[in-house]
Structures are given as C-alpha cells and as structure tokens.
Length: 214
Image (cartoon, rainbow, N blue to C red; front, side, top):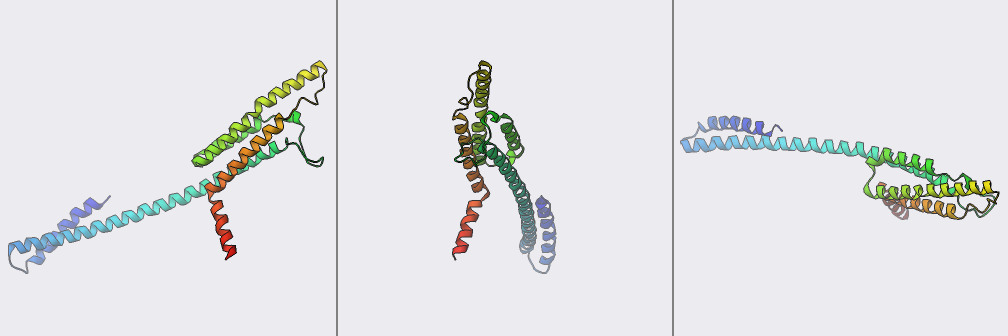
C-alpha cells in the first residue's frame, strides 16, 4: 500500500506549506502549530484518499471474482445434473412396469458398475465447485448406486450356475434389482432437491409465483 509513503510525503509538504503560511503571523508557538496543523491536514487527506482507492480496488476485485466463480459454479452444477440424468435413465430401465407398453430392460443386463464409475468421474471433475450439502447428497447417490454392483454380480453368477445345471432361470432375478433401482432413484431425487436449493431455483420459483399473483 502507498499510504505510509503518502503520509510521510504529505506531512513534509503540509508542514512546509504551513510553515510558510505561518510567516505572516507572529509568535514561534503559533507558527509551529500552524505548520503542524497544515501538514497533518494534508497527510490525513492523502491517507483517506488512498484508503478509499484501496477499498474500491478490493471491491472491484471481489466483484470480478464472484462473477467469474459464479459462472463456473453454475456450469459445474449443470454438468452434475446431466450426470444425474444419465444415472437416473439407466436405473429407470430396470423398474417393474405397470403395462406391457412401458419400456423395460432385461434384468440379465443389469450391470451398473461402469455407469457408476462414469458418474463418479463426472462428480470428481466438478467437485471443487459444489457446496457441502450438494457433496453430501451426491455421496449418498454414489454409495447407493455402487451397492448395486455386488447384487448384479451375485445374480449373474446364479444365472450362470442355473444354466450350467439345467435349472430354470426365470426366477433368478428377484425383486432385488427393482428395489435397488428404486433406492438409487430416491437418492437422485433428493440430490436434485439439494441442487435446486443450492442454485437458488426454489427462491426464484417463489418470487415468480408472487409476481404472477400480483
């Protein structure tokens, strides 16, 4: 900061000016007081100006950082939401359906390990920009989704052994896959609610509703 330099310079200059001005008066004491008073006034003025300029520089830098980081954070949340949608779409395929017209993948194809690894990679890429509630919610999603890998392995082994032994395989895939898919979808739904709060979308919705009601 330049304030100490300005303070000293202002004090010297102000003292000189004050001393010269004091030559028009009489009395050494009065001259000294006038000189010191003039120097102090100039120094205080320069110091106040420097403090004000420094504050404006800090505020401008803070505004710039907030704007840049906010833009980057919003992109991070958008990328995270896209990863959540991919994970959601995968597990929705393995839910029990009410009618024959609902698309449902064969339970034998349930192999969530790769999709969970891809999701975890996407999370790591944006984790720096996520707030604590979002990180906690996403950790729950990852943990819940990852717990499907042992289920898939167990069912795949049971299916293979049944085929080798000539036993029927239609009852191998019990409701564990459906239950697992429902658990993952519930965790994703909760995470999306956290994302909305973190981004202020809930507040925006409320304000929009108020505006429509006016």
